[in-house]
Image (cartoon, rainbow, N blue to C red):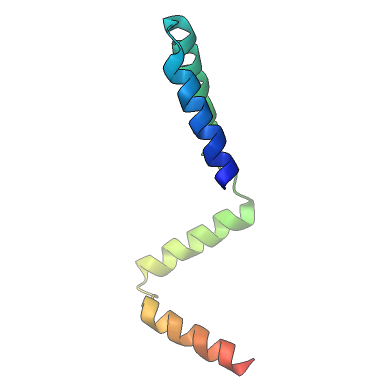
Length: 80
């Protein structure tokens, strides 16, 4: 991860030295477009179905607490 931080910091230093307004506007558009595109996730039909099923569980009150889930997970792990 340190490599990513090094690249990011190097880019920031370079950007701070740029005085060309048009270049900065173009760079802003590029970064904005790239960030919004990378945030999109394509879901499979199975994933969409699981999300729909989860929403139905919430609507029907079919929930358990995080504490109960942790307890079940520990019981499952101890049974192995």
